Image (cartoon, rainbow, N blue to C red; front, side):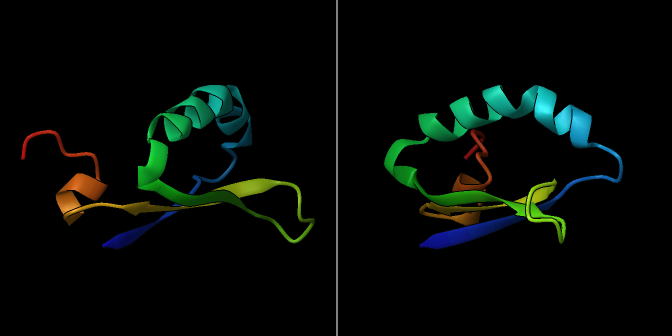
Length: 70
């Protein structure tokens, strides 16, 4: 089943987002075929990131959330 994760950044967190972006991209790449789609939401300027949409394929909601306690 496909799961959409809709993430909204906290106000004034662009610097934190940019600082963590390389590790974030690395993590997404590590998901392999599980990751179906990912990309940022942006402000009206089309460039300032303010959130993310991530779509993964998983067997359950817990698996989609990365819950290793299953």
